[in-house]
Image (cartoon, rainbow, N blue to C red; front, side):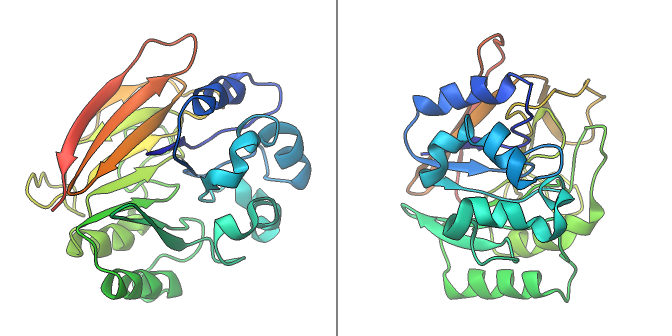
Length: 257
């Protein structure tokens, strides 16, 4: 079980407590897809906004950083708060095994270009520990129907994962839920090898007004909640679980490449 969301804790907003209550009843590893503590990822915001809510699951959380976490220089309070669970301080990218799955956490807030240290690490990690099933998490999405717009500087990360036959990518940044059909790094439908993207910026901060769907977007919703992945040998299931006050749900399954 892998469960989580991004865009989580803002003091004075009730959403993070509502989604934390969902986590209270779900076993497994908790992930975050960035923007953990608003507005600037300060030590005070982590203690006052994040810690009373999602912080009660800190011991089992494997986070990713977002642009609001980098509102503090070098995202230092983020790395201090999560400690070893956030990987090597200053990098923000790391990997771990979850059952038979290879889970890779990346950092969209540092250089992710073709010659970057992060991309070189990603290639080496995929080559050194090949897996039948791979899922990657980072903050800013390559594709989105959200108001922030797509992020073409993330294409190299996507392409490296696509070439390694990864299955799923998970993001935050836009405060909405969105699921895409499997596609290639250029946004072309690819039901055979394509990555399935989920944007889950629904962890607690105020939600965005929805915009029209972009190409290959299958589901788009404005609802607080978390996504649960059930990662099996050679397959996966997903379920979006809404927080109190919302009825939206989404679920489905896929097989590993």
